[in-house]
Image 1: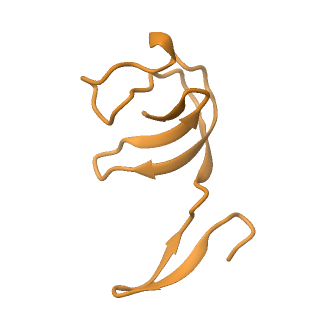
Image 2 (image 1 turned 90 degrees about the vertical axis):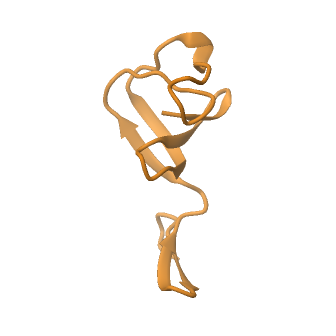
Length: 77
């Protein structure tokens, strides 16, 4: 395990890296967050934009959505 939370684990595909606690990332522009990984989902934060800030990214999708921890719980951007 590295100090930044990343862990090397053995899988059937060989060794892979995981970060069970997520990774801190700075989002450098204002954005909307959503309740699901879809622009058709309801907006988080009472529909207001989030300002640029650090977020803990805990998951993602192959098409680019990131799941982050917010004051409302986990949301998608």
